[in-house]
Figure 1 (tube, rainbow, N blue to C red):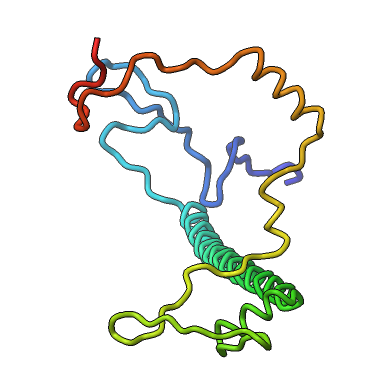
Figure 2: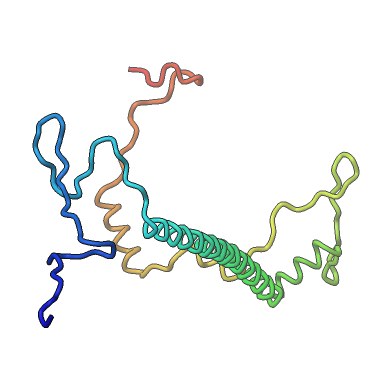
Amino acid sequence: MADQRRSFPRGPRGPRGPMRPKRPVARADTGERAAVGARRPGLRQRPTGRAAILVVVLAVLVVSYASSLKAYLQQRHDMETLQTEIAQRQSSIDDLQEQKKRWQDPAYVEQQARARFGYVMPGQIAYVALDSDGHRIQPESELGEPSAVGASKKPTAWWDDAWGSVELAGKPPAQDTSGPATSIDGSKQHSD
């Protein structure tokens, strides 16, 4: 009884017995054998658990990034609004500083006193111009910025002016020799 061992069939075993070899699927129309794991036409693959988890993770990422993007865009809009407001206030500050400089000029102060209050210097006679309805006529012109009076014309050197007159003397402008116009309405410009 020494050697009474039972012999079992050798080979791969699964959890429920020996594993069966996979059979290749035969195609009905050609008779060829398809590769193992190939899809049959007309059958859909079912989504796996991994695919479902991936979809859920992507949805969470999209929602979180969308809210962050919305907050980012709102903050940019707020920053642009504040920068516009800062520029407007800076412009207002510049205008007030210019007005403060104007009040430093005695001629401007005198002009404002005359215009607003009707003041005149001692020895002067004030005249008030009235329109046909008896209302005071306001003057059209005002005293401008003192620094802007000479700012429009840049000074030039004397030799530039002298050389310009030499060039003008060498090339006088052409004179119009066509004669006077024959009519005022302009239909006949010149008589030939």
